[in-house]
Length: 374
Image 1 (spheres, rainbow, N blue to C red):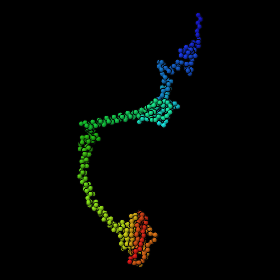
Image 2: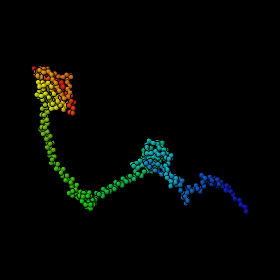
Image 3: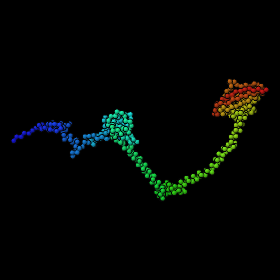
Image 4: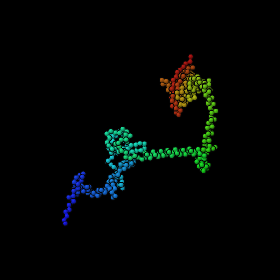
C-alpha cells in the first residue's frame, strides 16, 4: 500500500509566543558559527547536564604587584591570568578634586590598609571626602589589602603577649622560691641569673643593697651643708670677707690711679735703653747719649700708653729716637731739642696694634711739647 510521507520542509512548528515556523528553518537559525545546537549547549552544560558557564564566561581577579593594582581575567581555568586593558581606568589614590567616571578604579587608604573600589556611574562633581566616596551607592568595593589587617592583628597579638609576659614575671617575683631563684640555683655561682637571684634576696653582693649604701653616703653630705651656710652668712655680713677683698682691690686700683698709667713703672735717667714691655714712663738725660732706644714695643698691650721726659743738657740739640716699631708723629714733625739747659721735651702717646711675633709690627702714635724751666 503506498504511503505518503511529508518532507521535513513541510513540517510546521507553531509557537504560542512567536507564531508558526518551518521546523527546518527554525533549527538552522539556532546553529551559530556553523556549530550544531548540541555543541552550543555543550558550552553551557557539562556531561552530567549541570550548568557550567565558567568555560565561556571570563574569570576575574585583582592582582597587586610592585605597588600597582591590576584587574586580570582568564577564560580557561588552567590558563594564566591576563591584565584587562582598555576596560577599566586606573585612577590611583582617591582625590577630592576628581569627578570620577564609570569603570574608574580608585584606591582608598585607612591606616596601613588599602582598598580598591570600582566607580559604577559617572559623577558630575567630585566627592567631598573619602568617607563620602566609600559610602556612596555609586562605588563598589572590589578588594581590601590584607597587609594592613594582618599588621593590626599581629600588633595586637604582640601587645597581649607582652602584657601576659609582664604579668607572669611580676607574679613570679612575689613567689618563694621564685622561678628565677630556681634557675639561679641550677646554673650556679657567677652566672647572670645568679646575680639576679642575689639581688632578689638582697644579699651582701646585691646591687640593690649597694645602692642603699650609696644613698646613706649621700646623707653624709647634710652636715657639710653648714659650710655653705657659712658662705651665705658671710655674704650678708658687714663687712664680710668678700667685702674686705673688694676693699683690697679698690686700694690697688687707687695705687694705679696715682701712677696715672696702666703699668705705672718708671725707668730712671741713668739709661739710654727702655723696655716698653716692662715700663711705660721714662726719664732720659741727653747728657748720657744722643740716642734713645725703645725696645719690645711689639710685646705691649694694644693701646698701652707711655710718656717720655727728656732732660736737655744745654749744649746739644740733636736727638735720635730708635724704636722697634714705627713712630707716627703729630703733623708728621720729628721733635728737636731747644739746646737750653734745664728745658724738658715731653713725648706722650700709645702703642697701636702690636704683634708679639713681629718685632716691627707696632705703630707708636706720639705727640710732644717743649717745657722751659723758669
